[in-house]
Length: 101
Image (cartoon, rainbow, N blue to C red; front, side):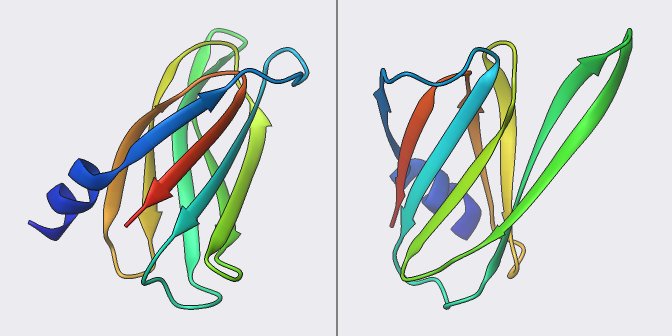
């Protein structure tokens, strides 16, 4: 139930900004998270004809977090938190901002 609530509260603001081709930057703000809480971003990538799940990790610092990585097109992703909450979202090769309440 909590996972659905978090997903419902998620709001995106996409900014067009100069980001290298095939790259994304996901900057987020989160309220109620503990300092140093780990967040993992999982998303599929196709490399040499084989699908892999890319896993990126970061920690919350002063209510903010940042992910950056390679990405060719709009892709479904999941953010998983230390407490096992999960947010489902779409990411694309550009600068993205997310605010989680």
